[in-house]
Every structure is written in structure tokens, then in C-alpha cells.
Image (cartoon, rainbow, N blue to C red):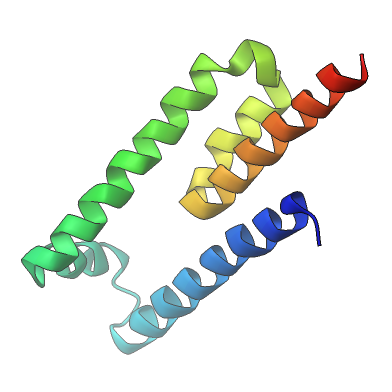
Length: 109
């Protein structure tokens, strides 16, 4: 299995697992989406630290995609940013695969 396939697998796995936990919590809490965010950020200092990292990495993915937009092209840039609505792991997978595809193209040229 190549690095792109492993990256896609791990990116999608991160998305599916996180959304499974979200769905379970939402089902137990009357679909209170915003309440979930409040609970996640206030349940413990440890949880707040992990989620703060997630928020910063989300912003980082937007910044990196915008910095590399000329190299990535508009479709890949939009895919990296739009996929953040699903998962940071999917966004990172899209970014890495796009960069690797560009690297392959440069090597072949």
C-alpha cells in the first residue's frame, strides 16, 4: 500500500471515528451541537488543551492552503479548505496528496 493510500485511509479513519463519537454524543444530548462544543472546551483543562490544538491546526490548514494556492491550484486549495467542515485529518490528507502529486509531476518533467 503506497503512502497516498495510507494517508487517505488514516484521514478518512480520523473523520469517521470522530464523527461516530459526535453522533453518539448528539444522540444522547438531544442534538445540542453547540452544547457539545461548550462541554468539550469546559469539561477539563486536558480537553481544552486538545481542542485548542485542533482549532489552531484548523487555522493552520487554511493558512497553508492559501500560501500554497498557486502551486496547488484553485480546486485543490478549495478542497483543502472546504474539507475542514468534515475533519482536519481529511483536510491534511487532501493537502499532502496534492503536494505529492505535484512532486511526481515535477520529477517526470
